[in-house]
Length: 128
Image (cartoon, rainbow, N blue to C red; front, side, top):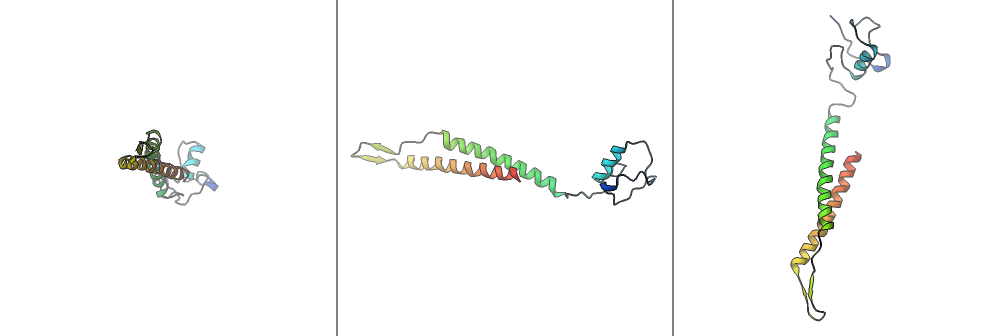
């Protein structure tokens, strides 16, 4: 029955020279199993140098950054490509201010600003 020493390190290579494992396997296969912390039977000892949170944090930041980028690009396109409405209607002497158009144009500006902020946040998450 093969035994496995629990504290292996990549610096000294696999424990084949010490007579711990038997069987037909390539040196590189054993070396990389030893460096990743896997035993020759395919079991992992559960300890990794980066911890269990690193893949989860990477996946969450990537998916959140992608979501922010898509929503930010949509908001930026809406704020930039939709034409604004005329706010003032009338002649020089008699000018009527359309409050609905003012609110609409303000919403377009806010949409552009939110889109820009989301794209910057997506870039920051992508850099992390």
